[in-house]
Structures are given as C-alpha cells and as structure tokens.
Length: 381
Image 1: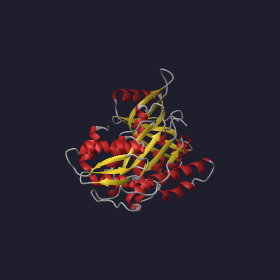
Image 2 (image 1 turned 180 degrees about the vertical axis):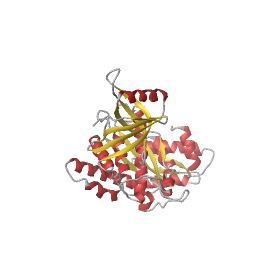
Image 3 (image 1 turned 45 degrees about the horizontal axis):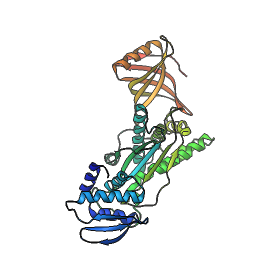
Image 4 (image 1 turned 90 degrees about the vertical axis):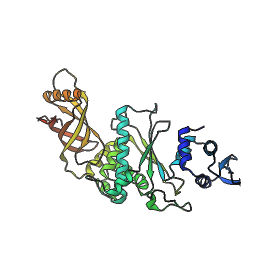
C-alpha cells in the first residue's frame, strides 16, 4: 500500500474522470465499465479497477488502483501518486551522484540554493533573456515562483525534485488532445535549453573558443545567474564535485515531445564560474561585498595570518548565498574568530579578479563586524 496521508490528499482532489484520463494517456485500454467502476488493461496484461463514483470506499479503491498502476508500469507507488496529485506541474529532477544518498549539511543547503537560483534565472530568461539579472524581480516572475514546489527526494544518489507549474490559471482544465502550447511550460523548457547551451559553450571555451560564445548563448536563456547556479549544483570543491544530471518529466495532463536530459560534468564548474563573472559585465578587477556569517576558520599556527570562509549574499547579485574564502592578517583574523564564536553577521569587502576557474581575491578591503570597519591592506594574489 502507499502512504495513507498521500492517498488521502489525492482522494480529496482527484476525480474518477481524472484517473481515467491518466490511464488513457499512459496507454491503458478500457475493457468494461458500469456505474460503480471500470476495468482497464495494461499492455503487460495487468488490470486495474477504477472507481466510477465518490462513494464511501473511494479512497480504498483509489489506493488499490495506484498500487496496480505502479506494479504494471514498474514504478514506485508514491511516484504515481505524485503524478496524479500534481498534474498541473512538470516534474524537475536534479541528480547528483552520492554513494550514501546523502550530502553533508552545508553542501545540501548549497545544492538546494543553487537549484532555486537555476529556476529563478530560467523564469526571468523565459520572458526577458539578458546576460545578467539583478534588482527587483518582475511581478510575473514572483507569481510563478510562488507556485513552485519541492517534494521529498527519491532513493539513489542525491536527488532533488521540484514541481514546475504550468502557465495556466488555477482550476483551468488543460486540453488532453495533441501537444501542449509552448507557452504552457516556457520556464521548464528554458531550464533544459539554457542548461544545454551553457554546457556546450563551457566545453567549447575550455577547448579554446572565444568568450563571445557566452554572449551568443544569452538568447537561449543563458545568464550569469544560471551559470553560477549550475556551477554550485555540481559542487566547487574538486574532491566533492560530481556530475549533475537534470531532467524534466512533462505532466501527463499536458503531453508533449520529450526533451533530452542534460548532464553538467563536474569539470565544467570552473568554466561556468568564469562565464558567470564574464556575463555580469564587470571589469577584470572589481569590488564585491558579501554579507553573512563566518563559517570556517583555518590557519596552520597558533598565531599569524589565517583563512576564513564567509557564507552570505553578495550585493547586487540576484542569487542565493555564496561562500568566499579569503586570507586575513592576524589582527583581522582574531576579529573573525570573535564573530564566528558569537554568530555575528559580517560584511566583507574585497577586490576580486576574473580568472578562468574561479573568482580570484586580489585583496580584502575591509571586514565590518557589528558596524566596526577594520581596514586591511594585505595582498592574497
């Protein structure tokens, strides 16, 4: 049997006619029917009984039907429930291989933040392709994002699943004949199209092609924000990074020709990072400000300079939190220790240089703790 809570939720919103529509579109054939139920045949020879009315046993019969569908289609029953429950959504899967089907806490948080930024950048690009996005989000983007949902992961590797809403009014029935109109899922298609273009551009640039490929890819939905999100999905740590696979299953309620999944090789993360910085249009050297928490401290000796990592948000960037590692002189490092122990928010201002493979810190301008600016002059290049 399936999860009782999921089936109860499904029964509250799924009409018998909806289940019959799903079976018809999935290739099942009706055999016989009366007022109480109908019998449907799968090409494997399996049969399921579908309730015809909302009677007292509706939830129980629906549960049996879901189990029968899952067994015939060789799927997990909860996955069938998800398809039936969220028929107004495409299902977006982002898979990062992990032997234990888990990630360390900070990596998992960064993974989901990158997933969110990927969806945001695709939503903005589907209506207005631009090299980079910053500032307030348009109302239609906000409206779309308010309807996006995340659902529980599935076993195997580390898989995030997002529900991408179709561009229809809530409650409006979808046509069940022929492919859906392109505008119905323009954000979903932008995600795969733009990701594919970003991967192809990064591969070509890694082999020596011109950076102008990034400019050409903007019309495909590629932006600084999208490149940044893709680089973070695979993980920037060389030892922890791995290939990320993205696919979207169109909802059965709005069928269409499938789009090929896209894989983002871990080795392209540095090139995507570089593309992100290039598309932001800043000079080779520029100043950034990041506000957040000191998450890591490191130095080889008990005294002297040390390295810190600040995780937070960079001003003027429409993206999730970022981690920036910098070297500090001894005095400023001690201040960073205090901020770390107290959980105090800091603002780090740094001069950075665009470099293939990373944003290279030239020097730290200042570290602001609780309103106290501590100037520094060291050069970490």
